[in-house]
Length: 159
Image (cartoon, rainbow, N blue to C red; front, side, top):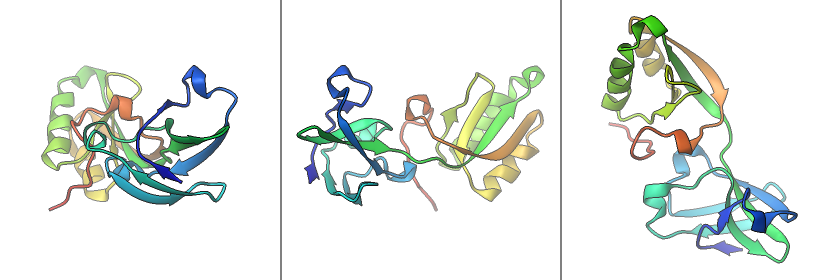
């Protein structure tokens, strides 16, 4: 099965009562145009998207194709991430945290409130964030919500 555009989201009314097959797309692959995957049910899926995906990315719940009553839906699996919380009495450290994450070209997401930030896990980042006064950082397994992305793009950029 070849999927060439995003048809909508599984929450859209037109996709109610459909047979759903999920295809896992790791968070760091969400901005790739071409994928060759197999759904959890064993259907082979080729994904070939246009340049719009470079800005928007694939998001959890995106419907990639439909065949009869069956739809293929993106699942962004949970991953290890650093959840960093800025103490309420140190709110200006939010800027420092965002600067340090951005300076390392890491992806950054809003957490559950204005004092919580999430970035994909790596040990040097965890150590750095725990050194910032008024910030506590811990590793958790979370499902990244791309609608809360602070970074202008998601990348796996390294030097």
